[in-house]
Image (cartoon, rainbow, N blue to C red; front, top):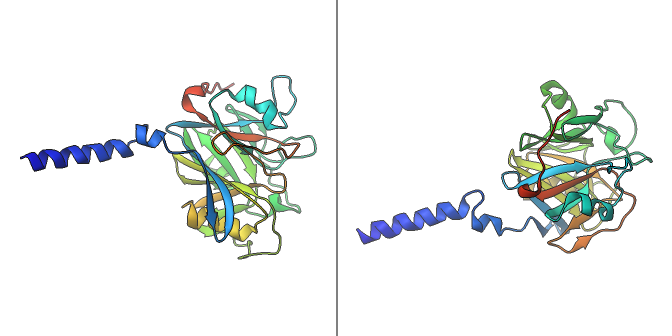
Length: 257
């Protein structure tokens, strides 16, 4: 009888340890340093049951934030991590779809052209009612999710568990890179390389090491990270739109127009 009681108690304790919002889970760091195929990365994981993922472009005065220094007072004391949220033009405006607090501030960009953004398929990272997703742009347009936050960039890195067909295994272009992948609707994973890496290596990080069936490249040479846990506030400037992970207790309700 005592053995059965102890077994039940142990099982109950294990369930509590793995339950969303449990003390054990809350102690897990959001950002950590990882190594994959000999390359170093900082990886920040947002559990949307405990965290909120927000996008920031322009401050109250209408000017782009442009830096972590200006973002920090706006994002609040529970800001855990932030990085580039996608490609932008010389005026620091997003070059593709951008949705903030349920408002579409820039439309989907389906134009052709040169550069990483136009290496089709490109894609969109979005948050809808506390659930995250990464979809190629055409799929996103067909499904038309009512996103609270969304940002378009390119190319897609991983599509349905397969690496983008135009990305070579280890091409000659090696740069600082950051991106986002989704492991499940509750888990968005952001990564930034410590140094120059190829698209192929970066895509395999998301697929093989981070378990993401879908992942999107966000930015390159100016990729920057703010992480209170890792003691990082990268100083590359200027920055366009930013994506941030904050504690849900610090998240204001989304108000749609």
